[in-house]
Image 1: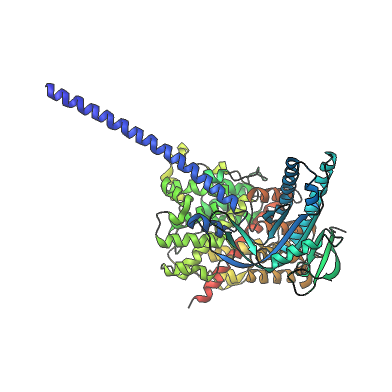
Image 2: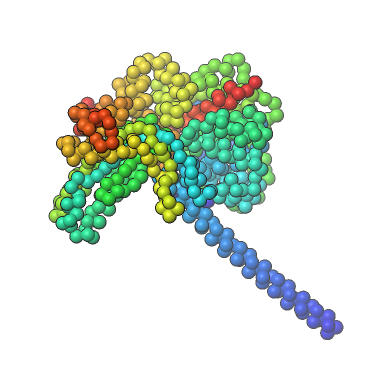
Length: 262
Length: 362
């Protein structure tokens, strides 16, 4: 009888331990599931966020294979924006103020670009490069880029009023836009990669932006942007100029305004 | 679910209504009035389009695969309403939660057959249209043993999801309305409800009648001949083009813009033909398509063009804010029709892969 009791007692203890272990395992499993759900959700959020800056297929390639090798020729419109005379300005400003002014400027420019279906591919010092038509095909990319440039101008005018009110120097923006075929892909080392475009189209857009320092025009576009541009944009043709790296002189057009309903 | 919960979603810009005629149409086709259909009852053709496309039978594929296509496409389009609804339907139909989760997390790594994985990948390509899916994209399915008709049916169900994703996203239908799978009465009646909800399957090919081979965008519906969707899509297109609150010009412009946006040349050609028939000159049409404005385009049409363009690839909340602003410029019926025609244009243009595949058929 005693040994039977002992056996039953031991069985009960074992059963209790087994139940306790099962409950613990179940709780642990639930906890892990919650963590996995959280991590998955976070990953998906990051993936969704990143899809604003690179084509979905590129993002998926990075997620699936930890790298993306796909590169393609795409028709893109490249916008370069740079602050005119910012280098000399920066020498007279407190570094903290300078960075704060610059960051707020970038926020406003990025917003203006994003509202016209472009995305900022990179910040270069006080300049930026934005792309239109790089993430999804966009037959309206030329109009979008020029609308974005005008929106950037308006945003800067509003920002300048705020800067002036704070007794800070105002900023002046030069924009160059060119449309053409470029190679788009993920470029960089293992430590630092970016989705960007490279090629002659990018170089020419950058050179055209530099022309805004020599010509009395804040927004300059090339003939390839003008072709197919909405006729409501008021343009002024400028004399052809030689730019570095391009054999033929480049004709540019100054964008003056957009005339909506007459 | 968590990932899409984070997707910004506006307040709904439409109110559900009661309408006996519309409700009868839906009950006859679907056996019930789905909650989302109530928002569109003020437009007879959008209601009938809803009934035709929501109750679409399947011929070549398994009904389970069509549910998975709907889930994957709705998730990819960040349509919180359709995603929540499909998730609920899948649970009611008996899909285990673990399987739904694996599909959500990464269907490429889920425990599916290679053929099903290829089908879901292809469906997503059709929906994304960046670039537009072509017959070359269908090769993995054909290699996995799918017939051309079955591949077309994958494209049909992907495009069908595109329709409902736009229909739900544009007015921001409230997603919580469809989070119903765990409600006690649904659980109690699950077997009965499941039998009503399962996608019906037909065994015989559905051949179009001679009179069904003509009409707007007939090339697209003819390319689907043999599938039950061909006659349903034919009916939807014919009804959409009957006189209604929106002009034929506006409808054709919306199709033309979506076609141009995703570079669907056959759809753009057909839309341009309709615009010429409506009295627009080629120069006016080109200006409207190139600049979303022009002399042959009135203010409502101009707003519709911009919205159509935005509907191709979008972030839901931005599209919804834009849609609300456009809705403020027109009557309720016009707004519902605009949502309907925009959704339909996105659907039809993405079906151009069926034209490609039809050329490969013996």
